[in-house]
Image 1 (cartoon, rainbow, N blue to C red):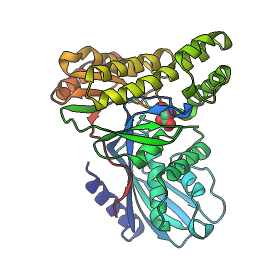
Image 2 (image 1 turned 135 degrees about the vertical axis):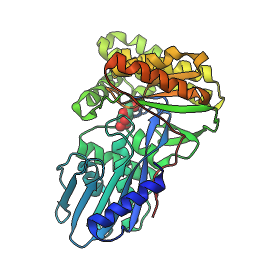
Image 3 (image 1 turned 30 degrees about the vertical axis):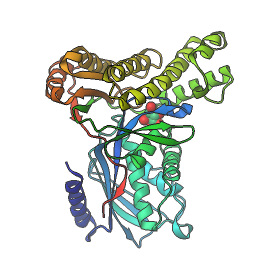
Length: 387
Ligand code: GLA
């Protein structure tokens, strides 16, 4: 569905719920990470792009000093007061908005009440940064309501803090950064230490980005994500470096005796993934597809075997796509996002997309008993105010 259609739909629903038209409509995209997974919280590199799937909020102020949020996706309504401090509450998705309101520096120091309708074309828990898109959309709405525009980095950090404190996920900065800063027809090479981005043009229309949702919903809050993060910190301490960004495969090998074998493998993933990401950015820039494809394959293997964040369904998708091979137009395929379910990302020749969809549809269900959802996306622009 186009953004304009979504905006119309949200505006209509807002009018039906609240009896007048919304004052603002804002949208924030999800993202797909081409390579550079579980590197952001290690001060490393990632190469994401925003996708043409959005979370949209239609909103307007109220005089009740209350926030009322209606979700089109779940049909649920959250209602909470902003008179005193904002707390976590139900439904669970409302915590992303509660967190952003709590972290936002409001005009006059106090949040005003508002009504909102939230709609999204992003699968929830699908590894495409649906949480970040909701946070960034909420922050964009608050910017409009408070008539101020944040520095993008400040805004991303605010959203990240909301996720840490209100959703309990110690995420990195990639998702929020991408949802805010992305540009059409570009991937972003993110340096998560300096928090700077280098655009990598993706203007070659003969190559498509295809996203395959395993329809296994991941839940990063369940603890595995936090566990990986702390294993990386343990490895960095053993290596006596501030973050794994500062280690090399040679220094890791030399310190093998200083850590257990799991910690060693976690670190090996992060260190090698950082190298792959820098190489992939160069190869993408040069349209060197064989190299991009090999790096994507190596990334998946490393995430599966060393970092252990894949799952049988993701491995099945990657295996099916990779077995179509170069002659079938496939450049590369890997899991994307936090893992434990969610989506795989493939780069594929545009004229081979239909064949790839047929192959996945025909085989994935047989192998897993589930149906995959498949779509392609051009690199999209970051969050914006539509009205
Ligand atoms: C999630 C987090 C990101 C990043 C990825 C893994 O999407 O929100 O910060 O760590 O997992 O690369």
